Length: 374
Ligand SMILES: C[S@@+](CC[C@H](N)C(=O)[O-])C[C@H]1O[C@@H](n2cnc3c(N)ncnc32)[C@H](O)[C@@H]1O
Ligand SMILES: [Zn+2]
Image (tube, protein in one colour):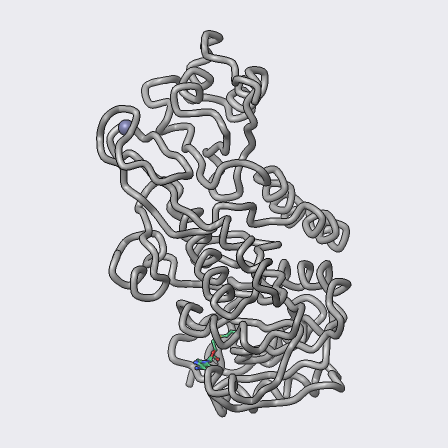
C-alpha cells in the first residue's frame, strides 16, 4: 500500500474525517473530493429546508466515510443521523469519524439499502448517493420518508443519461435520453422525472426544490409529502422534449414533425417544471460567503421559469462573428423574450425565443419579431 492509499485526516466544511485524499479505485472506503461542491450545496439546501420538517432525522443511505451525514449534522443542524452502508470497512471508518466529530446522536447500520426498507422506520431526510444510478433505490427511499420529508439524490451515470447508450437509460429510468447540446439538462430532468413518477406510485408528491449539474453528476433534492392529489399534480409536470436533428428546433411537447417538415426526436418522460425553488436558493445564498457558490446560485435562480432546454450560442450563430453573450441576452429581452445564462454551459442561453429569433439576436439584426403578449 502506498502512502496515497493510506487513510488521512481531511477537512471539509466543518467536518474532519479520516478518508483517502483522492478517489482510489477499488478502495473499501470511498471518498471523492470532486464531490465537495455537491456536499457544500446539499448542506446549504438542507439547512434552508430544515424549517419545513417536523423532525430532523437523517438516513445517510450510502454513507461510506460518513462525510455527508456528519456535515448535515454539524452544518445544517440536522440529526440524529443513521449511517448505512453495506461495507464493513466503511462502517468502521464511519464510526471513527462520527466520534472524531463528536456527534452524539448517531446509529450505524451495516445493511443493504433495499433490505432496510422493511425496517418500518421513517427519516425526515433520506440521502441517496450510490455508485452510478440511484434509480433502483428510489422506491425504497420514498418508502422511508414520513408524511413530509426531503429526498436528496445524486446520479453519476451521466453517460447513460446523456444518451451515449439508449438501452440502459430505458431500463434504469424508463426514459429516452437524447444526445443533443443540452443533453446534461435532459439528463438531470430524466432523473427528476423518474423520482417524481416512482414517488407518485406510492401516493407521494416529490417536487424538485434544489438541483444542479456538474462534471459527472446531477444532484436533485426533492421536497416530498404524502397525498394522492398532490402526487397527481406533480405528475402533470412530467412530459417530453421534442428536438429536430435537422434544423435544431426544440420544444417542450410531443411533436411528431417539425416546423421544417422533418421528423422530431423525443426525450423523456422527464420533469418539465422548475428544478429550483427561488425561496430555497435565496436562503442558501445567505448561508455562504463563497463567491463561486454565489455565482452558481445566481445562475440557477436565473433559469427559473425558462424552458427545459437551452441553445448553444456558438452553434446557433454558426457563421456569425463570435457573439457576446450579454449582448445576445439583452437583444432578446428588448424584444420581449425571457433570456438568461445557464449553469450548464458558459456559451449557452436559456430563452423562450425560438431558434430563428435567437439567430437574429446573435447576428445583431434588429429585424426579428417581437414576442407576442399572451
Ligand atoms: C458513492 S459512495 C458514497 C459516498 C458518500 N456518500 C460520500 O459523500 O462520500 C457509495 C457507497 O455505497 C455503498 N453501497 C453500495 N451498494 C450499497 C447498497 N446496496 N446498500 C447500501 N450501501 C451500498 C458502498 O459501499 C459505498 O460506500
Ligand atoms: Zn426542423
